[in-house]
Image (cartoon, rainbow, N blue to C red; front, top):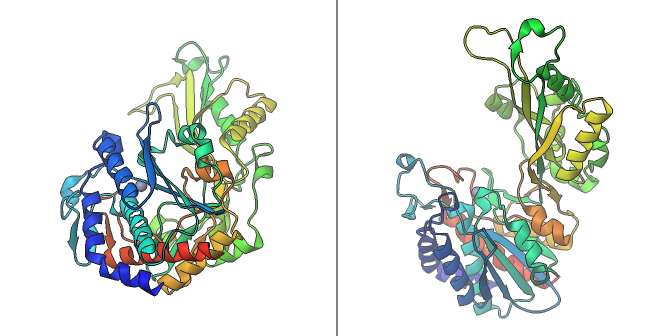
Length: 450
Ligand SMILES: [Zn+2]
């Protein structure tokens, strides 16, 4: 791999110039700016490095770029996205968000870390690998979507409509990846899902004078009693049967959980709290954060809360409740369990709706390709990787990895702890960028020799 590394070194200037060129193309999905042009550019660049690539339309969605190259009995799927967040507020940027200025050893641009840098680094790694080492030792199926920043609303349908094209991969190299403040590479292997529920109760045909309260039911109380049955005062979710579906961490996952640096005092200070829920300390805090489902009242609306007082008996009450999901929960299951739980307690008057959903996914940590990615990261970054068996947040990993039952590996990326994703002055270090190219090349080599 020495020749590969020398090639990457020798091409640094060109690689960076190309990254700048990519970052100078606004592709802001939320504002509908530059999407088609950027998709075409991505397709052409993949073709340039030897991929058989095409733009695939999903009705009503942004084009997805799909590229395939290589042969053999192993297949690596790769997932990236070419869309970016809106750059606003513009006055907080030190240089234009689409100028892609290089300053103080960093590239500053909207999307440079999320997710144009990671994609470009992979392309350039493959280019250098082919030039110096030879043909790819396996097949690659690459999906570059354009709607990640608005929640990938059509990715599921794209997968459904192109199942045969996408099937047969052994693992998926996910987008993202960063190093932490101590220089340790961060690898993430899963994402939580979400079931966002709307609950509502109706009472009398209109708001009433509250003198009628002795004889007319109050939907606000009905909803409060219903909500109170979902969770107890010890912070346990009490929806009948829900916790039976929660998969506990394996011994190996516990190992990784214990290795995740988490400054409890600093975190409590940041949140402005005195203790974590369930008085958790040590690795239990991390375990709760990454492996526990949640039931959160996000909002509650009823009656009168304006200035002064109004003696009113409301006729409507509604709440928004999000459940963050871990395997083997899923949105439809949670909706059904909540419905049955409420019915069983006589809350048939509480209407429950699923407003938004995302399935959770967690990769098997013992999978050989996962092991390979961890070991390559250790070598390239020269530090012990921090492995997150799951992240606390959600993402569309299930739609690709869950559908095909393959691990999703996010790691070796270009980010740093202050990359300012989704914020002004998004940036990556040139040094991290070059290391990410090396990581990808070495990972190809490692998987090839498995
Ligand atoms: Zn993003």
